[in-house]
Length: 551
Image 1 (cartoon, rainbow, N blue to C red):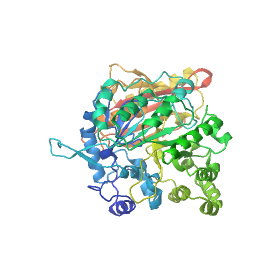
Image 2: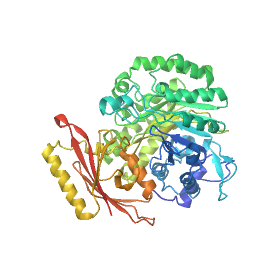
Image 3: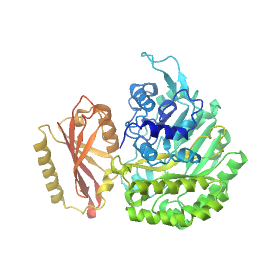
Image 4: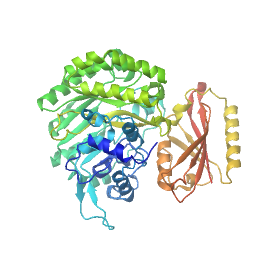
């Protein structure tokens, strides 16, 4: 799907964007004015683009990343309206027509969020004379520390899930003194920031950033997405020293649905803390909002949730869930999606009469589902670039002349390869070994290079590399402790990002995939991966075995 937007489509998209005063046109301004810092120390332009990594703070300094070649290449692509460098999700939203309602703000196309941030040139330019820019917005997701185990989440974003559901060791802490020292000069230019998690009010590194911001006293807007379980003296101190806007994740209006999705959360505690945060926001004349991850689990409460939020004059941001597939509306069979839409339409007249602040949210959500049904899922990103957009963080104040809304930006949840094997029948050790030998034979017949193997745990985190050398595929990168999605990013960085992927076989028992890395590059490399499930005690799916060869 990923491509350059056609001029007519790009022009229609631009017509509903607040581009007055922008020094140049671009499909997205995120590479020019924002950075997203994740739990592994990877830096990306935004929370949605997981495929094109700008750099890695475990081996690079912040300046090397922000002013580096990869960031400059992404900026050049955005000026050309070229969405082939990891921007599949926003292209899907644009081609689905989600931007056509000008009231919908950035909730309809994620890239529109970055239209609201300034573009600040940096001096001097690069050696080649290219313009340089400072980020005016930062998005922090510095740890997965979290006390909840939401059913739509995984261990990359919840330490509780990682330890209890996935039985994996804690993620390493990657943000140390050097990073915070480098961050100081960026905060001179930053005027807005979002804090994700995990649970931001449990993350030590976030409190350190908040202290730095409070000392400078230059922030105009600080968005914090919270699960609503924490209220203490430390939280009150942050609220007292920074211009905070609060977004609370709430995926159900009833206790039953809320607690079924947000495991470990207590509805009464959430509501008590909601009233505290609401009092703070009203007392400081700041808008407050909710995030609602619309899914098969809660679509029946969506209309009532909007009425609930309207009663408190709170904004709602609808987060797009594509993965896990069994929970997503966007992976429903066409006939079942049509039933959901008809249920929404039965309440459409009521919503148009009753909703005020969140009327546009209802209209946009219904329109997006209708657009998806009309297109028959033909561009759904989970089919080609498996993505999930689930949690969200507060978005910036709207541009001058528009009504103020606390619209919230989505944050990515990566697809996990292991979930594609959820229905695989348990195998005995002998059956697993037979499958491994068959895979080795297939790869040996395809390539004369040695076959190398990775073993992952239940969260797609690489636990062991089995090969004859110290470096998997000669990449020169230590992969243990990183995810299969990280491996994809490393391959893209080392071998090129223009890939053609063909699945020779994709069943609940095996994936046999060829990746042609020569498309549009000079490398002409090909990789073949065979992915098999691994089982533990009592037939439990414990992880994956990835066998890979190159030619």
